Length: 128
Image 1 (cartoon, one colour):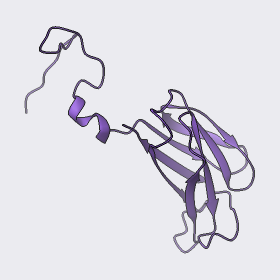
Image 2 (cartoon, rainbow, N blue to C red; image 1 turned 135 degrees about the horizontal axis):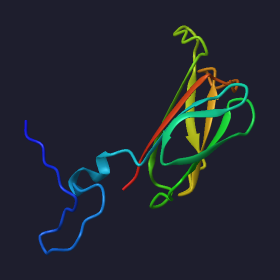
Image 3 (cartoon, helix red, strand yellow; image 1 turned 90 degrees about the vertical axis):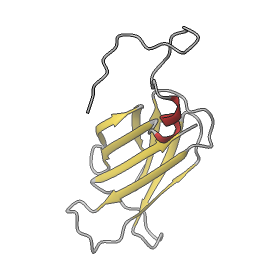
Image 4 (cartoon, rainbow, N blue to C red; image 1 turned 45 degrees about the vertical axis):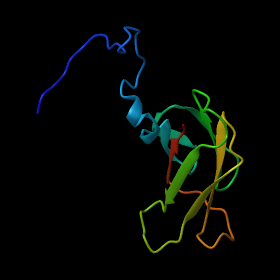
């Protein structure tokens, strides 16, 4: 395999490019993602493109973007896990009230009847 190293990439007309330098892949790359602890003192473990999270109550979280999305029509995929990683515990997670600045997550017991805090909450966002 070959490696290309360059300090500056140019369009065919000589103008400079911006990252990502491969526009065909741009829509297939995540614009933001976050992994956070959703129990006790809610805290981000790691992220990209997320400025902060807010604990809005049991099983309710708000994720704020560090850079605005194009509009509120992006795709946000969320998931959550039991604190002990117990696969027999039902957990459901979904997104609501999306804006170009943030989205909210609800984590429940899988049947949708009771909101639950979970130790592992993840989200990934794709935007045009």
